[in-house]
Image (cartoon, rainbow, N blue to C red; front, side):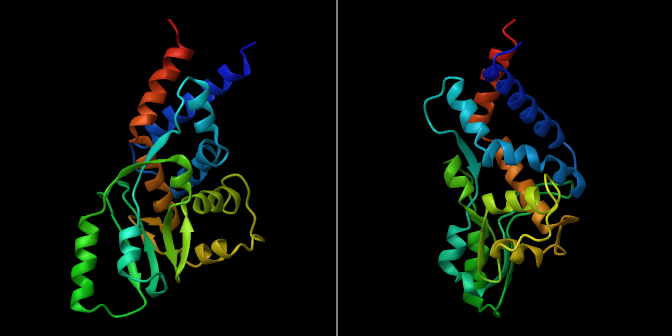
Length: 218
């Protein structure tokens, strides 16, 4: 029988390889929902960091992420009816920030919005910072990546279907289920963006290489 750590290494490698393969094609909402338990296990349940450390890396694993920090600095959160970070490509090209404001924008606002959208950058951040990074705003409420992952996995049928969940963030996410981005409900498109940046992270490539060496020594 394999040792527990080796089994976990094998599972983690298989999870990452599956995500890479699926990311090569356009995904349906059903497919995104079905892989949400993998993302929850890797990120929320800390499997990714656990395997990273267990296999020999001493640092905190870093993952690629975008941020809406610049947007929040210019436009108050309360002025934002709906915003997503975006960045995924689901067959119709890469879709970046999607924003609906609660006010009419001035010419100056429009210029700032255009510049900030052009300046969206990808950076490597520790996993715990990534999870606490807002990725959606609904009616002035900030939704973090951790909350979005848990919403899809725990309420929308990824792991559980639980319509009784009454968390404030879940209630706000319920309101945007029918907003479509690239032929997907906005929550699934943003979830897909998290996966995209996860898989392009240099540390993920390092981890996959190390896992292959450990699980396939020959």
